[in-house]
Image: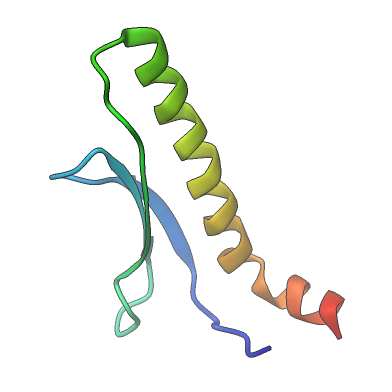
Length: 75
């Protein structure tokens, strides 16, 4: 496994119902991943979907930001 050495952050998409994981480093790939969520019109379901998608996006972001620890653990 190769260390991607990318620092990331989570931002909401400007055009879609999704959270984007983007690089904070200049010169690296900008958008790493998109975590979409369903919008149904039901406020309770929409909030649940959005918060679950945010948890998943934060997890992906944390994996990239702690890649050194993960790579060393997998050796």
